Length: 262
Image 1 (tube, helix red, strand yellow):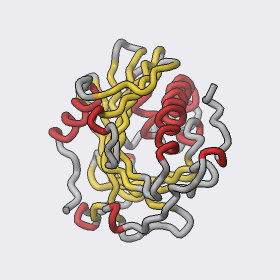
Image 2 (cartoon, rainbow, N blue to C red):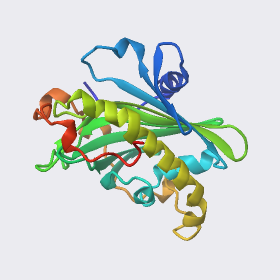
Image 3 (cartoon, one colour):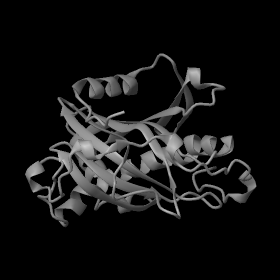
Image 4 (cartoon, rainbow, N blue to C red):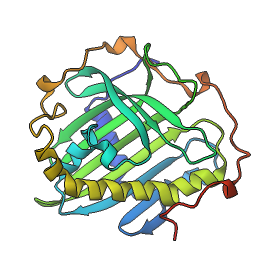
């Protein structure tokens, strides 16, 4: 299947999924973060979606949007990140990038190559991505190449200095992960990441004033220094084309407890 840059219909569909209530079951609601899973996913063996929401007081939608784009600031809040960088640009609002994240021992670390696209839409801001193959960035020996089927953020303004952040993801982490790993991510790791984004956003305006305050290529595409690539040079990343590594036998007792578990 050919790689396609999302159009307005794709963005509106993603927004509808973020805002939908029917068919979603609340799995976690604590410290300002709510996590949902689809009801039809109960007992299924497919790649499940997860949806989260956090209300961000004293943070504008524009600031949240900048924080999620600014790769130079990401290390300030994404403690699971090993590396991230932009590879090439496709259009004024689409690019290709790399991201790797640290999994808790004894799991192997994961990485992605994704096509990311973004769209300001009135009081809403949307960022979505899915996995692609880039000819110069094949899977690495020390990582499991995970697959994003659809991942993204919806930011909604609710006043001059208040916003709501939604995160929806459907990712195949590969590696035949045991069910307790998936549960732990949805109940502890992912909600904690949402709170980190919120806290980082409170500090971002001051940080940005000291670090290239006018450089925002996601807003001003003429600032981008990335090489261009044609969408025809990319291919969809299919999970079945990747090596299958079985980690299903790893026991939960081998993992150190999360510092968010109380």
